Image 1 (cartoon, helix red, strand yellow):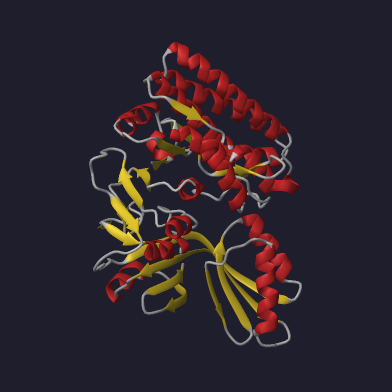
Image 2 (cartoon, helix red, strand yellow):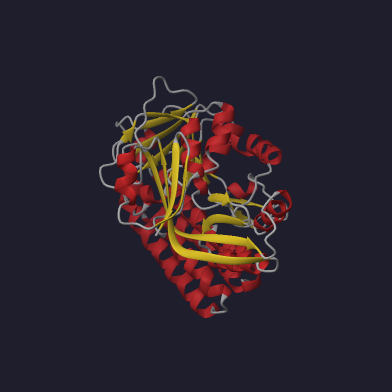
Length: 421
């Protein structure tokens, strides 16, 4: 049994969703299908969140109604009259839940409000896909993954309760698969012990596919994308990318940690632990071989693996009394980042200063500066980029940094990172 994950690009419109039918119907074994939200739906939901938490409730509800109409139009172009009627009723239930979340949003609880609204995208897309498959005589069981994946209450980046979730996966999902059914669930979302919706971090649908594969002892995971396999860089940012036929877990987890978007940073660990291969294939042509990520890759010779993260902030923290940045100060600084749940993408410290590169999230950066300023002098460079290259060459570094101002550079035997503007 296998897990197939379909991202937003693969279901961006009704034609693309319909084109996935051969990929599924040609399989002889039961499948667990994990779906993302349609196309740009998550962005639209985030815009609704931002309106709602600012108290612009009417505007948020209008945007919600517009999103509902878009999904109904999508369903109408995908389904016959009978199945559309059923799908429309199910979609209305999801939007009713969303409207309640909009009305209860509050700026003091932004992350919580975010998750109650943004979680709806995957529920909507998976609902329509389930009815589409039924219309085409592909038996399937739609499940709300929030009944399976339990987490803590770290909203927007929830931590999975592995033992509880694995037990529920065996109780709820496994019996359906053993009956030969296709099971459709949502990626990216889960719920707390008291039933509040959470998200697992942006691009968390990959992570959902991985943890379910490990919990259910699946044969493999396949992520279906609009590229012909794993590339050495984001083809939207870099011309002339190189396809990688096979790559090890170790290399991919390094790329993911540094911010590569093709694989979610947390996805590889459960697969590596369970020794489950991950395939990246093209939904435009299922016969293309794609790429495979597995434990060992024989005689691997990788091209430069390039990750570029824009919209970064470089923060420099300096002691006021010229005390050294040693264990005591480092412990204090790390505690601040930990308490605010801010991931450090690059770190460096000198005698009396500490430098960190982080994602430029306005709410997080403001809270961080306020906390650090109580004991330290704080300065920053905003709107910078973080370039990371594994298996670099001098030529590729010159090409990628030429004409840029280098603010910080770190280099090891295999990896170079440059903060630049």
